[in-house]
Length: 484
Image 1 (cartoon, helix red, strand yellow):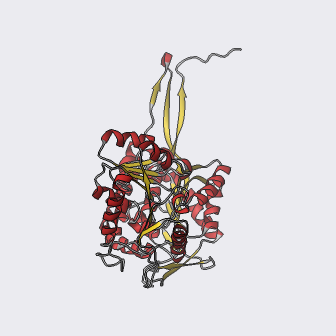
Image 2 (tube, one colour):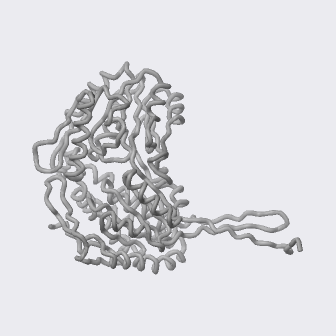
Image 3 (tube, one colour):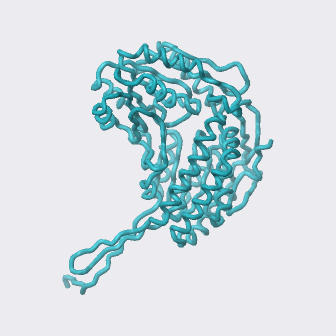
């Protein structure tokens, strides 16, 4: 068990263990073997984490933004120096190929720490002059203790996407990773302490849903930020509302990717591959409903299947491999169930569709054509390497169909008609849209969804508003008038 951490939790600047908690086996998806065993947080561990965060937060908030930013920027530098080590850990946590984790995970986390570290010193209020010499000034204040709840697809990135803006604003964070991928966030906490963060400012506790529920409902918690599924989001949002807590919900999707006749087919196929098969399809913003205009449908499918024939599936630690296993046996079986539904409901299987005959949780990249809007695979989020290709004839028709979903996380369009491209994205009911590319998420840009896909935004300057609030101070320079 070379990936066994020092202890399950990281609280008040140190590793902490309580073996009374329910065991959590960490399984390497490429082989199915147990590579570490952790324990879910007991009530005592949760109490310790929240007490530590509450105690440390005020002093952290009292530091200047520049001082806080310096810590975050140092942490970013350390993450980049250790990128390979962190990427190897992420690959064992998630099963994602090392080729991918080396460029998309710890690097993205470091970007967030650097970006919000740079913003921290600029977080000021404003002066508002009024008539007669009176004025108002505003003070941007931290919320207090924030809870982050992570998903299993990007454990290092999510730990930083939530932690960096929270810490930049002067909050403390208690972060609960997914029980499926518990290892990476511990390293983020370690690195922050090494970079000079005060003890207790960023704590990591492991656990199942009951631990998340205990954190979300605790009266000391001012804010909850969740990345997860819509059903989980509903529960967490409702629990947070009970205590009038601030929330950010980054949930799932069934995002449309529209390819018009005039699109560059090679680029459109690349976008569809990135939007369906990167991370073995386990990305919330994936464009899993690929609407292809009838004039190029067969050409698109032909080129897609030619390129999928070149996919290299294998050991994720081999840097030549570009397609890895599903994160868990349970997730693999969920996806296999959707593939069977696709076949049963009459979709045409163009590529893949089977589990690979090897150890680990490997599925072939799978493409269905002739998919109709009412099929299960076109309506429900699959969260695996399954692409649904649907035909369309006109722009008006495809826009109505693209928006006919409860979800609204992402959407994309491939076309060489610039006017149409902007008209289409203006018409999308989605929070994150793409023109002639797909699934890029730089930290400088807001990321998040509309409708059932969530509330609030991660990254960019907007995230600052979700981790702070404004205090208004009215200053009178005049006598006070009263009616009696």
